[in-house]
Amino acid sequence: MQKKNYYLDSVLDLNSNNVWGVDGQELLDLWQKDIKEEDFASSEEKVLNVIRLAFDVFHFDPKDEREVKRYSTGEYVILPGSSKRKDAIAIRKKVIRQITDLSYENIKHVTAGQLLALIEANFGGGWESISLTIRDIIESAFDISTTTLPASRIHAPGGTLERKVADGYEVLEITKGTWIEAIFAKKREPMEKLRFMSGAGYDENGNRKVKDEDDENDENDEDEDIEDKVDDDEVDDEVASDETFYESYTPEADIKDVDDDLVDD
Image 1 (cartoon, helix red, strand yellow):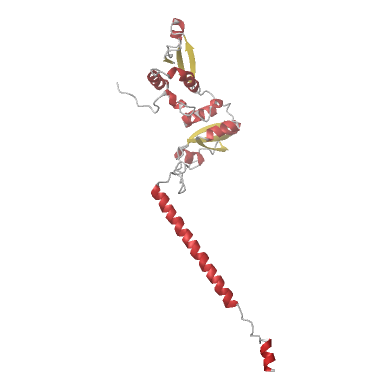
Image 2 (tube, rainbow, N blue to C red):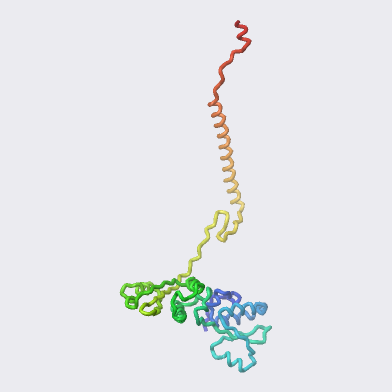
């Protein structure tokens, strides 16, 4: 039997985001591998709390034939309890039955068709009947747009509906008297992670770089060049100031010595 390649290496890697993308069989395979670790028992309850976000979890006595029969219908996956437990654990993936079951975590694992089915089952009120909170959750994973037109025009050739469907949107039509509201939904493409362009003194994670000796020497050389340039500039400025002062200085007129005048007389 070919071994399956799973995204997760351990049930300890589970979190609120990825647990919705895991099925029961994958959890069982990972659980059976991890339960052999000595310290798994101390993490078991924490792991189960994460599993509960996307699965119904039931503890039962594996010696009780009635309970064993109840959870052996194929609807559940049975996880063995760790050494400190005497019970077994039955898990079943939660079903998103109504639009209020949607969350920022599970919306990523819902298809456009499933989403529109949930909206249609929401009392048939259309997009505006959905609460702002749920709409925000939906729009975090889907491109949504709507249009309301007379029933006679909704399927006009080259119209909005035809163009949207050609662009990959799925559509739900809700009749409102003689008008029809069309709700278009298309899964958003995963956003590409932006790469951080760090400054010279920081790495791509925003941490200060550890400078090696060569870098420090280069930097010191640059600093010395800058200081030398500053000193030269200061000297030039001083010389220029002195020259400017003396160039603008007008010598006073020669004054005769009083004694000279007296001698002449």
